[in-house]
Length: 608
Picture 1 (cartoon, rainbow, N blue to C red):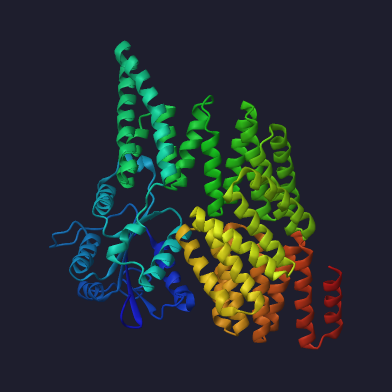
Picture 2 (tube, helix red, strand yellow; picture 1 turned 180 degrees about the horizontal axis):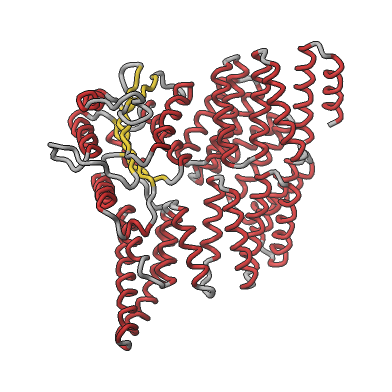
């Protein structure tokens, strides 16, 4: 981190990335509002492109001076490498500026360098023009050296999220030359195993093609030869992937896919794209497979893509994938997978706040699981129904469902399932204000998650403990728990958990009377909840903002927030939360001296 209180952040980007430059400025603005956690530095944006240099382009001398003095150098590229720099040894201004920063970094360890690549479709990677070819070569160079942080993104939200996380990590001193390996994209052990399984199918296809090459002549033999080449490129790609050279693998897969009509080549490529979370390419390729190979069972891949889309908050696309998987599994008569698809749809509808539809999906799934006698599936659905009952305010029914699930998990000896139920029981006891019992449950779950080594479960329990400590009035402990949880959720990219932690931190700052920090947290949470399409989260943050504006004495703004929140909660049928909105509206009218309206609102609050 910079030794001074000003951290200079220089951005260089190609001409086709105006949106990213605006997103960069917005990210800097939000971080300066207080999102840098414990870091004290103020970020100063630098760079020569619009909108940073609104009046006129800066001279090369000024640009060089800024690169030589900046603390962070950011390069963002898509398909343009940039124009040739006259009288320069480098191929473009872009390369000249990057190499200047890189030379300084190699000599002094400064500035920190972040490079972001906007995703390019496989067809373009397979046959790149001269500009894109230079970018591909540069990307492969960064992968080979491994000393500079680089990432790929597809949307503005992804870019903003990555930039925000990396700048925070830099300000906290977590991005250093010796720990760059922790920021590199890698395949999990499970992902590698899935690719190895897909390799077996590829080997079988290769045997078929070898037979055709020996038997066919003319055009048919040319087609077989092209497929043989695609298989060889796929083998090269998987070798690179298993070695950890994911960008090399990406290029090889792009080249393999262009001439190929083999399901096995597409299947192994989809597996790769899903595991590196290149969801756009995975989805496009899956659609091609489903249209081309009616007999090919791609439903498991479609379902996995749906889960990844759901985790990113793209609920409409996720639903489309779950329904595709369900339709395919029903035709094939795969009851176990049908039950899983119904359950996935139930979770999705519950996230949207459509509890009746969610319950219908869960009940369909449970009926199949009971017919099959699958205890693990039954346990999962009982847990889902428990969460649903709790959302409706039926805590006794929720506890009964959780206890049913826990009994099965104990019988099966599944630590992960038991941990999940203990966590849910903790949330339930928290809702009943039985804080001691809630803490017992969260601690049991946390201990199991630590034993299992599951960061997502650890983060969830830390967040819940933060809520519990705030309920006890221990704000310091509460903030510590939420900060720990948030850090883990950010590293995992779990937007739901991040939104929850930001909301809870906002409430802590609100309780302390730090209204500016509270508003910054609520607004960040609200933005994430809107991106996720979660109405209950949106309503919660609007309500919190209403309470904040009320505390500031801005009663008009407060009323507007509570009315927006109330409108959402009325649609969801969340009576308890509606009562809170009515109560707050009553207090607002009371503060204005409108006793008739205040009385009406408080009466509605009691009746809700």
